[in-house]
Image 1: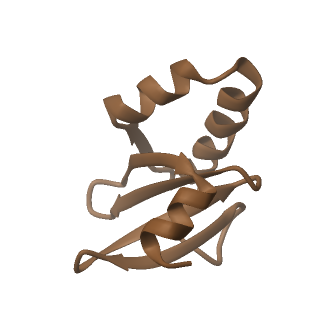
Image 2: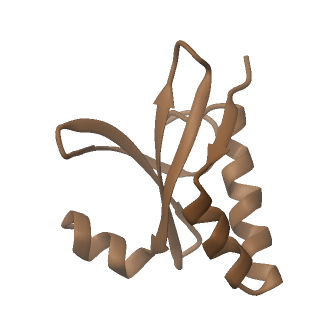
Image 3: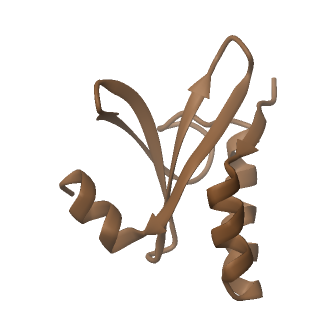
Length: 95
């Protein structure tokens, strides 16, 4: 079963500002979420994080970027809500 991946307008805008190589790498990794978005399964450096009382997920992309996303199992959807530099992700979420 594959998941539909939805990306917020904010993330799309960031991707458009990046150079072609960086945005291509990020998009390639986001597409991996279609097959299996859960940590410990499929490919990608994924982890579950309790943020603001909700279970969210993060995926590191290379050593440069981090995406944050939610999984809506009943709808078979993955919603990518944030794309930030990995250092900022570590500062913001205490890693």
